[in-house]
Length: 453
Ligand SMILES: Cc1cc2nc3c(=O)[nH]c(=O)nc-3n(C[C@H](O)[C@H](O)[C@H](O)COP(=O)(O)OP(=O)(O)OC[C@H]3O[C@@H](n4cnc5c(N)ncnc54)[C@H](O)[C@@H]3O)c2cc1C
Image: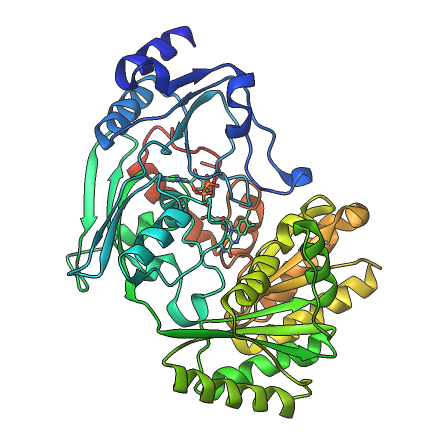
């Protein structure tokens, strides 16, 4: 280990290499629920390169010596992807955090260690916007691309993949490759860039990303659409989507969860109603108003109660902050958070299936999520730990019967590898393993993540 530290110091300088558990504790875990989080191996060296060239030299060294490398972004992942599970190198991109906005092409070029918060701010300062909001603002661009993160606004704008136009990637062998660019069209051969997007740090280290930006929407407001039951609220979703209105976000939440999250933040949830759809509408003011009216009418015709409007920016932000913090508020009492996803028209049936599983196991399963994407977050709580495996299996099976996937946004990481194998065609697994071998012949990059090779 001493030799490795010295060699890494030669590449990045002494101040960018950290050895010793006490100095790198916060790099040894991510936001995965603790009972299912993979145990970290402490015998690691943390290195913080300052350029793509340094990343390349680190990977050449690691590949030569067959040392595992664990790429790390903001550590907000929910499936243990960034947790080091063998003795090796933790590679943090945090020093590579520059962002340049290209106003002419409506693009940003961000280094992988820039945060989502930093990107949103840079776009806003340039009079533009980065429409997706894929999760915690402390997540880094490299991590968001590596996970193909989704978030609340995917219903209108899609996931990270829809915004990535170019990548700079360092392969496990140390070669640096550029994919795509500031291009809206690019059909040159197989699209390897899209293979890297969502590969969870197993095929290459993302060092730079070209992202599409949008002009800012002139006006937005948030509608709270209360319902008496989960069933009624989620069954209204396909009707909204069929109406031709595509909200910026259409989230499903429950009063109890919003109350817990508000309390966790030291705020209050003051709105009447048991369960809610939260719709964010954005665009020209007159269009937003007419969409809001139509949307309210659809909900009322489908067992919804009187809608509530948040027009002030601070009110809107408070609702979204409370929604975004449900996970954090529930985390302490949770065994696991699932993010199963079904075709949008089946989201009500998935919720019904989860209700029936909860009843059979006498379990409490809080549910919330990105309703219009069919993407439901369901928590299995610590109090139901005895039935954890059975409840999880039943939710996955119900999801698959509805034509869904076991993960719509969080990914496989290190904790869902068995389920990936269980629910994926063996030929697909064989092809994935072949791709991993081509990119990473010595299996040094984030081993035991996505695949067990
Ligand atoms: C409160 C909260 C809310 C969230 N909401 C959402 C949401 O709405 N939608 C959603 O999709 N996710 C959400 N997430 C999950 C998380 O924010 C995303 O998965 C995010 O993409 C992780 O980014 P990160 O930088 O924190 O990556 P990390 O957790 O550090 O790493 C995640 C994975 O990416 C790899 N990786 C990181 N950086 C690189 C790089 N430069 N090159 C190659 N691989 C890399 C790691 O090895 C690991 O496998 C949420 C998380 C929290 C805590």
